[in-house]
Image (cartoon, rainbow, N blue to C red; front, side, top):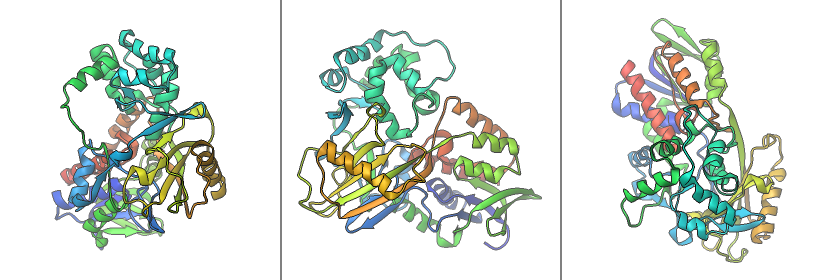
Amino acid sequence: MDGVQDIIIVGGGIAGLAAALHLQYCAPDLRITLVERDSRPGGWIRTEQVQGFTVEAGPDSFLSTKPAGVALAHQAGLDGCLEGVNEETRRTFIMRDGWLHPLPEGLSGLVPARLEPLFRSTLLSLGGRARVAAELVIRARSADEDESLGEFMRRRFGSEAYERLIEPLMSGIYGGNGDSLSLQATFPQLRRLEIVHGSVLRGMKRSSREKANGPRPSPFITPTQGMGALPEAVARLVGPTRILTGRSAQALESVAGGYNVRLDDGRLLRCRSVILATPAFVTAGVLSSLDPELAELLAGIPYGSTATVSFGFAPGTVREKSLGHGYLIPCREGGPVMAITFSSRKFRHRAPDGALLVRGFIRDSGSIQSASDEDLIRPVREELRSTVGIGAEPVMTRVFRLIRSMPHYTVGHARRVDAIETKLRSHRGVFVAGAAYRGVGIPDCIASGQRAAEAAASYL
């Protein structure tokens, strides 16, 4: 790290790591340094091995349908240890009035691709199912302005379907309030179906005809060692000499021929180009003195928090039930727990033989950071006891707080991102990457880092 670096990457989450590795392949002669504030790279992707249980702090898998994630895993040498969900136990439930109902088959994203399974479902009332079917004859909205995801779903499918089916699925992806999330930034394909076909259901049906029949691969995959294996493998390929951990960037200063990155220990790292792969509010702080207007745009992207509570139960202590992979709890049911995942039934290699690994997700109530571990553990234990009858004492408990971990794409988000990118053009050699802009999933973040890497290499 002596002398002027060609590129400094700030942020060692999966976006920053993907950018660093991509640069090594597309521009191997460039001098690169990655700066990460934590003692290890990986960001919210973190796996712990505790008493034979594979415990995830953040995401437990990534979408196989988006190529960037699978490609990076292969590049990192994880080809032989990627697995999909356990098909033998593949069932998911949604709570309605305190009871669990199977999730209807045939869903594509948030909405049904086929009506027949929905009509057989007990999740919605007869009137609620009829209202979903009526989507076929509801006229498309002519206005072009962005609308909230909640507004769109209620308009097309009715309030009951939104509250009992769509909202819990949406919360599992974005974690935010559907009445403030942008349709254009989260599920623009649904609006396109409405415009092109006059109905989302009609468009889904026509799209499904074009897809090949037969068994489909698991939409979610993960390394058998846990998700932490992905950033660890990428970091090894990037190399320890290129990664500076335990340091954070405080400011970016424009100087002749490039930039100075000011670190929290007072050091200045000189470079020709910078990739800021940090959360938007961190990026805003780094850029605040360089461009206050740009910083304000970045700071305007809100973030939500959550917490996960994992329990490991010893073999023989939990009565076998058809619990599937877990269940979702709509907001309308009340309570702090939004979902329960039976992790060792969703994925193999997550618990000792006969043992059970369970993970509960806590809603963002604004008090997650200040709550004690017991405050977070108690509602998950009670939820397991009251709904599925698990009252045994766990042999392992782990609590993780994911503070300001999820960017919320509120209405108008796409315009905000366009404005951010426009402002960045006046700072040649500065690029951004990560979940804050055009996709929150792991493959989206990887692709974002790779695009920033290509832009930086092209600039130099």
